[in-house]
Image 1 (spheres, helix red, strand yellow):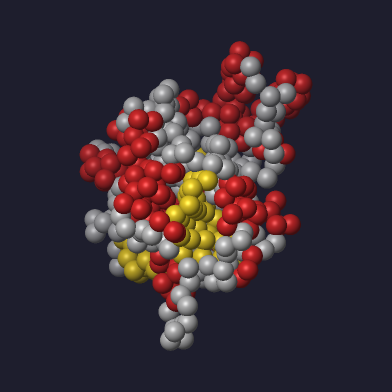
Image 2: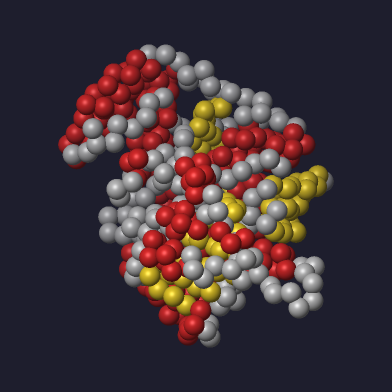
Length: 435
């Protein structure tokens, strides 16, 4: 879309969305952070939607456009002026009518200064969830450093309506300090930190899912969900807190989460060829998330090996890691930090992209066997190579950024049932085919 036309469309949509929000009488729940926003939003949706009429933004439509399209109930017109002309008419019509949802559940995606101002001007939250603050979106024209990221994302707290609730993950050091310094009521904290209002402990994961304990005052809750990764409690705990805020019986919320599934590309289990198992994290990647994914690979492989017959071959741990984008001048250092984690978590490393090669070089420097490290420029080249190397029992972690990496293409090539790709993988729409 041409820049001038894009600005005009954005301006019109913003005006229409504001008009519609003036008629909205329900509650707004907003999710922001550097990682895990969509998964957290979907977990909150799964719980709240059991007792309320909830509308959420689809997939990861969390930008300025995504927020407006969600409020106005229209899809994107992408780069077609003709399509946008029709959609603007539809948006104008929709803006005349009240949205009868009881809860509007929105992701607030922020990748440059001023983004949060725009989002909160359109829709001020009653409940705001901050998942974490990590070094992402550090390219030119984005953020200078992680402190600047925090300053922009934390504006969501100041935008809360009177009596609003602010849910913070205080295992994240920036959010811990923020919770301590926040001078208003309504802060609810969670994490493994002993000071958490919702204290998490005993998190364990296997290929069957994750389970952990939450302690809140004198209440103890055992939480289980069929999603992989001990760190997924950061996704699930805000859903429990929201259940509490909105008066949903906690046992109902716990029962709902036992059936919760993550969106495509967020560490989902997919059956691979030759009896392998894929941990599909192909949606996106950032340094802290990749390190957690590597730990998950190690954990689930160890759990899968428990109880195997003496002398039986353990599961091979395979890490397929692509470039991590938008890291700016820190890119080299952050790729190297991930590389330092690989040797303890994987038996085989396959990298995709020039920056990801740094991961392999550091892994070799840490003592990984050079016969177990392979470099490729594209996802399809990597898949063509590895298809001939897969062994029964392999557990294969796939993690990389989306732009110019597209590791869902790797996953599709090694899926046991590629006919299910449109249902199980990210970026399967036509608009992505030629990108």
